[in-house]
Amino acid sequence: MKLFATHKAEQNEAAIDPWTAVHFSAGLAAGLVDASLGRSLLAAVAYEVIEQVLERNDAGRAFFKTSGPEVLHNAVVDVAVFVVGHALGRQWNAT
Image (tube, rainbow, N blue to C red; front, side, top):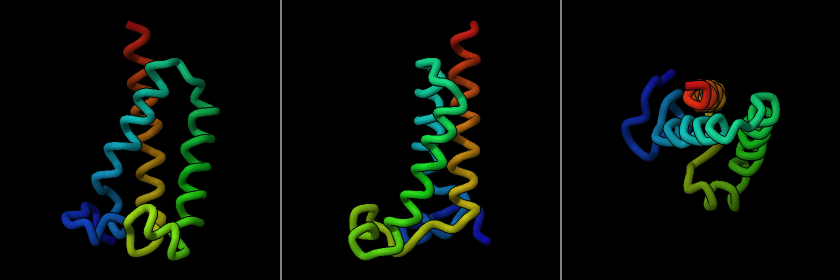
């Protein structure tokens, strides 16, 4: 298992890739607008499931510009950093 993607070709094979920052940012944005954690988390998980389905066919791989579906640990990290971002956004609002 690779922890960090250092090349584009590794983006779906490592736990952390540049898209991890996008997932964190989406969570942060959801937290800043006071979106509920339950609905936000449901959306994040639904996105990961849809991404898995799409990246298993040629059109999806072309759309996402990947060579195949992301590994499970990448999807788990993406959802986890989304939740962290959401919590930080909500925490910011409480200050």
